[in-house]
Length: 116
Image 1 (cartoon, helix red, strand yellow):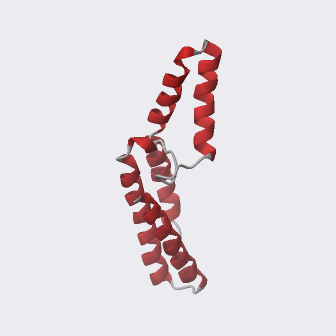
Image 2 (tube, helix red, strand yellow):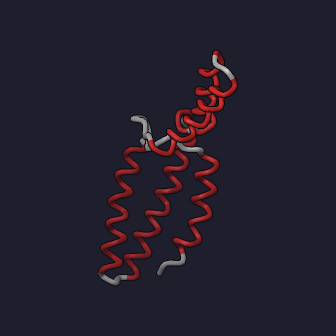
């Protein structure tokens, strides 16, 4: 589902760019609103799957590291966090800490909404 939404976001972004280039403020505002709504929808979809939660991913790395020494356990945790930023799984658009992602989205929304 999130792949469908993410693909649709490219179309919405293209509509925003076309309206901006055409200097059509009405179409720009409408396209921008659709794009911003799709971010909220993607947040909602990603929040229902444990595969997209940062804590779940790091927890699995910590569980796997139980048989190793303390240093290795730390490395497993650090690597799990590093992999999240570079790797995307086939189920969703990437492993996302929903709370952090939601906070970041909410922080950026006022900036995006300032655009004409």
